[in-house]
Length: 430
Image (cartoon, rainbow, N blue to C red):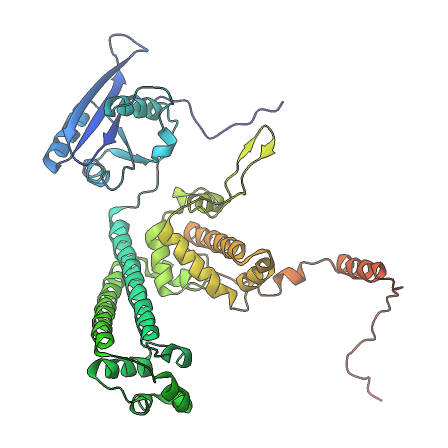
C-alpha cells in the first residue's frame, strides 16, 4: 500500500459561524474555543430577522466574538442579503450547496439543529464553498442573465406569431426563411393595418425574396381576420419592446465588460464564441482562474463532466453530467453548435463524435471550449491557436491505418498486395 498526500487539512476553524436562512429570519450558530477548558468548544444559537439593520447588528456580534468565517446554505435567493452584508463587513463568507450538508436521516430537524450541524461540519472543513463572483462581476452577470431572459421572451413571442399565422392559413414562414426579416416584417405590419390583397402584400418583398413573388402570393392567401390582426399587433409590439430593451442592455453590458475587454477579445477568437457569448462566459465563470485549480475542476463545476456512480466495484447510472448553470450551459451549447459548422479542430471533433449522438457531441465540444477558456484565464498572455481540422488525421499511425484497411478487405475474401505509388513530382529535364 502506497500512501499519497492529499490537499485536505485537518485544521479546525477556531471561530466559525453558520446561518440557516429563511425568508423572514435566520438562525445563527457560533462555535468558538473555550479558553478555560482547552480542547472544548463553546456554542451559541441565536435568531435574527433578515432585515438589513438586523444583519448589521449580527455582523457586529460576530466581529466581537472574533469569528473569521461565516457559512450559509444556498437557500433560494434568501442568502443574498446576509451574504452581501457580511461580505461587506470583511468576513470570509462561504456559500455552500445544501446537498453537501444534508442532515443525517432519522435525526430531529429544526432551524437550530440545522444551524448547529452546518457549523460543526464547517469548523472541520468538511464542505467546500460555491463560486460567488465579486460585486462587479455580479452586476455584469445580472445584465447578461436578464438579456438572456429577454431573448427567450422575444423568441416565445415570435413562435406565437407563427402559430397565429398558421391559424389564419398564412404560410409566409414556408417561403421566407426569415419571417422577421425586413420583407417579412413589412408584410406583417401591412396585415395589421388592414391590407389583405396577396398581390400587394407580395410586392413588399425586398432583394432576393422578390424572385419568389408568385410563391408569396400563394402563401399570403388565407383567412386573416380582424381578430388575427389585433393579436398580431399586440405580439409585434411586445417583440419591438423586447428588442429595444435588449439593445439598451447591450449598451450597459458593453460598458460593464470594458475592464475585461482584452479577455473578451481573446475569448472571441474561439470558434463558436461571439462577443455576446464571451461576455456571458466572463460573467458566469469570472476572471480568476485560481478559483478552479485545473480545467477539469471548471468542467466539473459547470456539469460538463460525467458524474461517477460506483458501488461495490460496479458502475451505476448512465454517466450523466447532472444539472449545472443553465446560462453557462446554454452559451456553451450554442457555441458548440456554431463551432460544428466550421473547418476547425472543434468542428472536426464535433463531426467525429456526432455519430454517437448529437447531444453527446455538443457536451464534448462544450467541455473542450471550457478547457480552452480555462487556459486563457490562467495565462493572460495565452492566445487561442487552432489545431486545424486535420489534427486527428495527422495523429494517426500510417501503419495502423494500412493494417486496418487490409484486414477489412481480407475479411471480405480479397488478397491484398500493397505497392508503393510512383512519385508524382515534375518530370526530370531532358
